[in-house]
Figure (cartoon, helix red, strand yellow):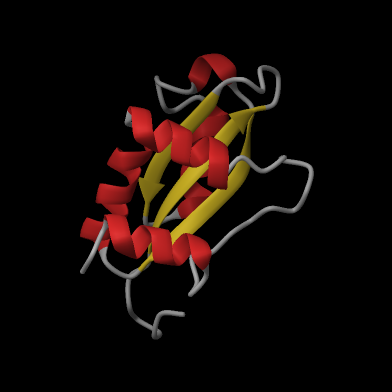
Length: 113
């Protein structure tokens, strides 16, 4: 958990309600506001497939690591990582915050400090 006053940067995955095969990966420091933007059509990349549901998010204290993880998730190997480790059902209460776990260890291997 971050100290009070420390900025938190989120990497999140959205899934289209009407077209579940459509996913979107993004990053922000205001998760609730950003999801509202996506669902209001204020993002040209996601407007066509709205509304969106939050599948999962990962919180980072370091913005550079968050952006690097977001970019990784958008690569070919990142797609496979998402499929294997982050492919939760939107109906299963799968909100995830990166902690000291297997997933966190994988992140540290790929994105060392």
